[in-house]
Length: 276
Image (cartoon, rainbow, N blue to C red):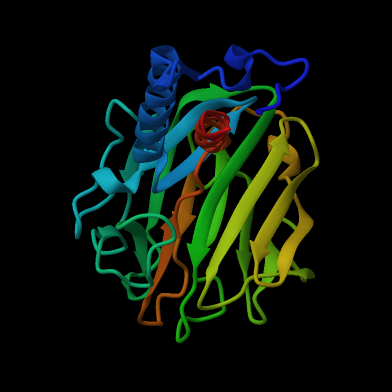
């Protein structure tokens, strides 16, 4: 004889199955979660992301750019604008498959032989208070100079050379603070792999926190804000390539947003519930 499960009715054993048939509502919810997660990943892959108190002020998917061309003005699914400066060869979109995808097929490429021109991006709205967070991936191949192949800045009052702070690295690949002209040997970049770069700055503070994550682990240090600009509205950012005598290229890529990861987790939970 079959034993009954005490404290459980047949209908409570699996709420997604009734009389041998799948609950239509359960199937519908799983479909919605899957579709939303797919859309978010499609729109958020290959992105440079900057937020102000959690709201996007700049967001670009390099997937929408034309390979060989300058970064395009973000489309309607993105936020902010690009204003590439200097020679057209300095910053371009590439899909050449080098150095290998972090999470997609296209990157922003900085050509080190092109000189000093910047790739400037402007926020959709100025960040006048709160906390500004920037996040991107950075790849430095063997053969490229250690000496400032990439400098990343956030600037104030619409002037790209009027920074609130700037970071780079010099010989030895240690995090370099533009404002005080010093390197932090406890925070190191690594060549031939993707380095996750995260910067967090509370407007009005004297320092910004920088976290570099790579095969050495997550390493955090501070860089100084420019004293005369503390409290000024942050209006955009800029990438510079300073190693003008070195051939080769560097690459910028995306960090998927937590919201999309959370939706995937929710979809997994619903699928697990269905199996149970």
